[in-house]
Length: 435
Image (cartoon, rainbow, N blue to C red; front, side):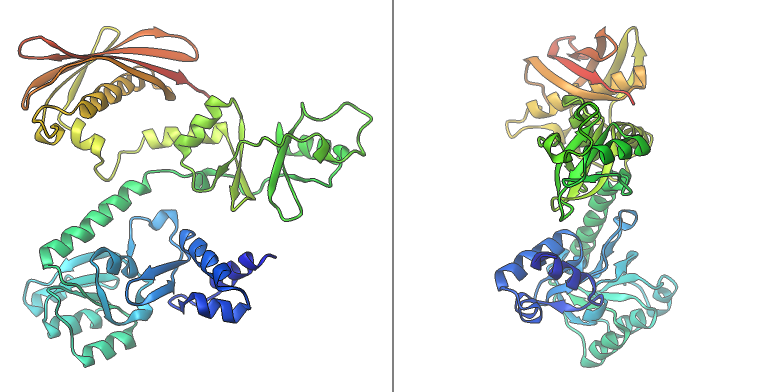
């Protein structure tokens, strides 16, 4: 085990809420401060620790994909540029929902439940009530709290946070962070679909053993790892020599030009790799170590699942396209919408980037509605565009002009609904991929 791996293991075994530092790790494990610093940064990227302003780096509970819609109190401190007054040991706990204490104490009590965050000013009775109900407290306006409240927060292991923002701004910042995390929840990563129980061979295994493993695992391709479990190549049935070489080492025949992904790679990007490079299997690595395998079939199934689930948070695409209505026409679709203020450039006309986004997105939507197939954008060419004024009603026609088993082409035309003048034209080419 390397020093780096030893530090990561040490951090993983620490109690949730433990404060760590570069110097502490270096002294405890007898390593250099540079090695300790790099390992702590990797641990932060892995979600094992979090850097909290004016406190330091704290061991936190690793967030799973299922709980990504929640925030920890440590993240709230970062979001509002806050200062922790007490209850530091509870920073790793997750926030279920927040509420604003702008009512009487009696009315406030019925809204409180464990795991909530009360946003309130310098109202000590409300702060104490929140701690009684197992809620954390965020004090706005830069106010502090009494020593009694601080001690009670330490006893309850619930953070008391103070920030300089007003209540409205504080609530808006937290709500924005929650919305962004909800959008991230819909982005499926390779780690969500990969198979971790993967058959593999080492560089010291022979050809005969490799043949048996490929046959038993029913794979066309096997990852090849070294003695440290690091991916060094792949071996397929076609790479193996003919009979008579069973005692030869497999590393002599393996392909060293490996196409792989990390566990944090998005499934959408993995889909592009399977199309561009024509591979059926992608090894998954974490820090160069083999951790799993994902197949083209797994990727297609995941993309079908994504298309069947509505986005919870509102993205830029949603904001721009929400006012478009569509109807089916011969060999395509017709979209009707309006140029909104958020689509404008600094010059006061519709941004060319926005118009390109509208044409490309509506072209892809037309293909998906028409064929219900898995597609990947191959090229998008805009060959005409002109300025458009605010509040202009526009019509977008997306017509399929060519289609085959593996390709599909769509012509997109944008017209002003009032004077029937052509605003933009584009050609969109896609590839079709199947399991």
